Length: 287
Image (tube, rainbow, N blue to C red; front, side):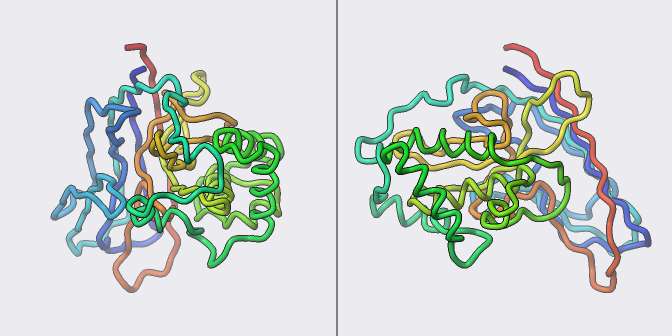
């Protein structure tokens, strides 16, 4: 399928501020699941300097630097055309040694996956998350594919979703205790449960098709798990499904902060709060 996406991000400040450096991760990635056809970005105010780069996680980012003039708003407008091509999220065969967990990634792979094997938001795994992961793994007799599907359905069916457009995701233990959370919270809980049984996981920010009748959409977040033989594969516990051709990924990282669509600082001396407004529109067409 082909998606046309327009996204406006608008920050308003109650008093004049000076913008420091900003990083924008709003360019949809191109990989085996999606192909970026067109992308354009407009900014107000215009930065004095910009540079497109790859960050530590391999995401395409736009780094911005601004003049020292004071402003009261920052507006970022993007347009993208993306073709999604993975209509079957299970179009792979796992390596024989990785069908059942726990297993050890080969040393050459494990060296790259180290940041993805430990919790990003906690020093240690929450005992409750470990218990949940081990229970589900036991129920499916160690089968990795069934474990991932069972974990997806458990969060989708047993946890209450609520909309929280701003703020960092919560550690998995807190979300588990509250039995509720945003898509970001569910993504982190899913990641930590997988990591607790030795599966590498990362946080993804992006878009999901959602309800076609709604004019405005939301940013979305979900986890990806590294499956030997299948690579990074997405699961969406908020919607209770494996990720296929109705999700568009922007960025992925071991730590959610490094997948944030927009991140930046204000120059010293400002201690107020900003107001975030946004509008996302998606139109789908069949290729």
